Amino acid sequence: MSERNEDGLSRRALLQRAALGAAALGLSGCDRLSQNDALLNLLGGAQALNMTAQRLLAGDALAIEYPASMISPVFRPNGSTDPQTDLYRGYLANDFTDWRLEIGGLVDNPLSLSLAEIRAMPARTQITRHDCVEGWSVIGQWTGPVLGDVLARAGVQPQARYVVFHCMDQLNGRNFYYESIDMVAARHPQTLLAHSLNGEAVPVANGAPLRLRVERQLGYKMAKYLHGITLVEHFDDIQGGKGGYWEDRGYTWYAGI
Image (cartoon, one colour):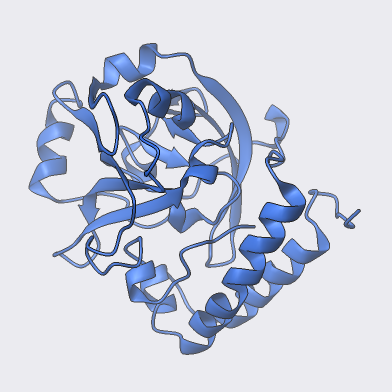
């Protein structure tokens, strides 16, 4: 059994976070981290070992959930905080009443869901810790349908291996943010399409109207400002072909903690 500190962190997780923090010392923001060769080499070397160890040892174990008394006064946002794309500003101006989440690709029944329909779905509420690759953490309460349940409605085809999340924000003025996870992570019971944070609608800074929560990975995997989900066999032909905005710029695809 692994040793854990007062927050429940395993020795392996503590060592990993310490290494990440040391590599990132003096940097601010994921854009600057992506220019740090030492950090990228560290992440790349750890990816295969981390994924194998976590999947073998942890299986479908849940991330630690916390009491309400530990919710952070402010949930610090990561990544984009106020998207300026025409796509996003148009939906925001109408309070997302005409926004829809399109789910397609390798599914039997493509879905087009309004925010009201997503809010009406059976939901899970969980209080978890968000760990950013920059070295900070924050605890918040998230509510939303379990992604696996939503995908089951769409009917996942056997050849689907990855779930790709399409977002409405741009970090470089050209490419829209995107992310991906595999079917194991997608079907984890704590992987949510979160519409609420701390009992209120997710704020713009934290990803309104809908964001991904995949609690056993680092924050850059938790795509914000969602408007589309595509199930694919591979992601070689999507943007840079590495499975995510930051992955295309050198980050590891698997960011388990």
